[in-house]
Length: 325
Figure 1 (cartoon, one colour):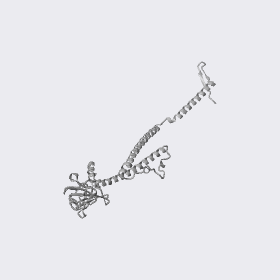
Figure 2 (spheres, rainbow, N blue to C red):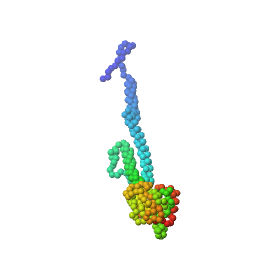
Figure 3 (cartoon, rainbow, N blue to C red):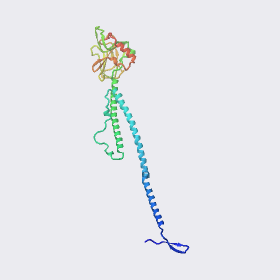
Figure 4 (cartoon, rainbow, N blue to C red):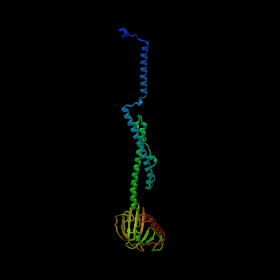
């Protein structure tokens, strides 16, 4: 039962009963409905804009995400730069280093091979950015593998270079008598007239005419295998083993400056020009052996002759004249 309400009427000086008017009641009802409607509309607008309303924690997470994306972009650029540099090194490795050292190039299939077998990235799956994370890890793994392959290749090239350096030092690459000490090049490699029989026969070395006692130098690093006069026709002579199948011979010497078993270096004084053995006049008879076979010494003077001097020597050595031994 609703309560009866009264109000004080000042004119009649008495309390009068408040009569409820239908219009006023309707107005109150309408006002309440409008309030409910406006509240619902407000909540609806707030609901639609809820994703754009961020809490401090969400803002912090957004900053971390933006920084992570930036770092990923920087990492991606660094990987691209590393791939470009690695590609240039691979190109030089195959087309320069390995060509120079006569090594087979590494096939692209071996350099760029992937990883077979089990799924290496299973632990990275199931997240929002799994595809991105897996792709980056795959790219990094392939790059790492290519670097490992290239590193091993460079180790091989370094070993070949060290061996090549030893070979270049060992090869008999200088003229055994200095140009300033020479009287002339008496005879070269090839058919020549024998000074004693006057018959045409093959001359297996080069004759350097010089006064008796002229210094003779080792043409490459090696070990003295012989320093004696026990070989027929050579008189006092020296044989040096240079390794890699190379050996040099210095014949008709006046005297020695080395002994058997001694290590010598290119340019060391090993003896002096003479005319011992089967010799017509003071000179040095010089021979080079490769794997036991006598070869033309003219191709082994690049260590101390200019191109002009070599051309002049080549013309003289090609003349078919009389040898001195």
